[in-house]
Length: 302
Image (cartoon, rainbow, N blue to C red; front, side, top):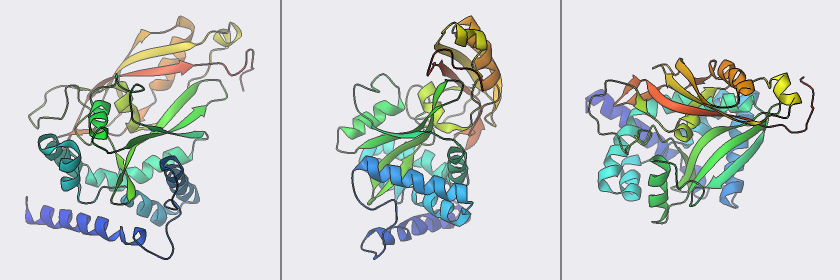
């Protein structure tokens, strides 16, 4: 590690450590750390972050999002996931630090624009046992006593479509809930932790993992004929994301013909956080499910 990189890393660790001071006996605990169940604390955290974003309080937003970063992450990853995988995850996490400082505020700014209901779900079987490989790694670590939580904002558009925007995974580290991102841990690639070798093509990322990285989601318009006919269902799309997180290729896999074009038109405008592999942006091969559901039959379009 170069001297400059070493000083930057040490600075990050020192800053993360100093951020712990208010949580260990301060007279005025932070609003998102008042005690209570995990769900209650995480909901307070989400509300504090999105409130700061809505108010345009960038200093507060950066303070909150900085505290979501894991202090002493090398030690924590090895202790939580084992020596071999922990070392790889810590290396991947280190490379994401710059993005986290700049990207996490933007994530909450995007969430602040949406109206919906926060959902907090503990990562446990059988709900996510089929999701690979990231959630399986969390399940395995969970069996050793570490609890992980999936947080998302569930929204229902006026058109009747439902979608959930992910705020990521969270776990308690040194008395504070910290955010985890599967791709930033090297777990978004089919087959497990990234090996660190060269990569020449798009990496395959599970749809549920990639969903956590979306930064711009356009809701599809519910086709009037489909609405009148009471047609609902899921449209599955296969996509290749460019290195900058925009749509490069988009094709229909399955779905009702009356719903497919609306899904294609909307998803074509979606954008994701760039995915890094060994520190460099790469293309991503993934799938997207767009769910069409009617709140009430024959509800007119807005």
